[in-house]
Length: 313
Image (cartoon, rainbow, N blue to C red; front, top):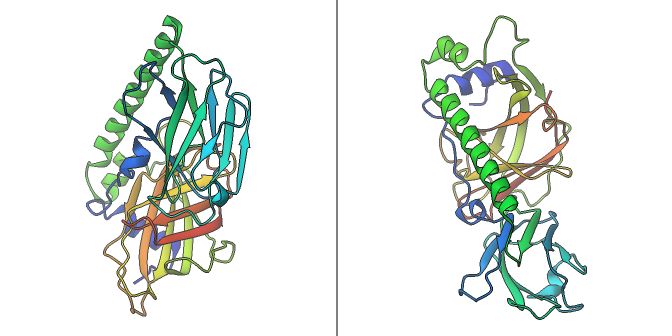
């Protein structure tokens, strides 16, 4: 049964610590590269890059391309294709299906090895890559030093994330809320907003939305917020629906995969009573400025729920 108030629903979610689990990203998009180095000699490996509907992707190269050499499988399905002298931008098909694949080939103008580059574009409901930088020539020592520094920074961030998760695995109840930093004396507390009337949704959604709340909670980390969306959903289809993953898509922002989800059980078809699904992110105060498009999908990646104009209080 769906909680009758935002505060009651949030308490239900936070106190169900054992039920909340971090969902992994889809494997293909977890490995989708943001930069690629092309070897002079072919290795037979072709990079797979994730694309999503309504999310343009740009490939940038460090060498000029042969004019008109861009080859794109099923080019007529793409909304727009904009080739440049050292780059090209694609607008994926609006009807892109999860797992669909398209080959794309470019040729370089100077005749040096490698003379061409091939990529496989793989469809994903939301976690498409916005930009891929392709390096054809060997990078300098400074480039590698910069990459090492970036990797060290990522390792530090992972360590901080592990520490945060360790704290969140602490005691339950009110003690758990205090230990995780979600409840302090000085913080203004949880802010919640009933946004059902404001969100938009396409007729193609896999489930029917009854009610939706958004939440914002301050954390112990400076300028970092935890935000969540709680939905009341009804399954009028013929198959059960279980959340696989979700993403927030903001204007001119990279899609943000969810950190935590909570769904007590798969939503069964034919039930009159709605079921609850909650998804959560950790964002900076600047990133949390909406509106957003929220996308949720099941294991197949094809039964989507899309909500537009999602905002946080």
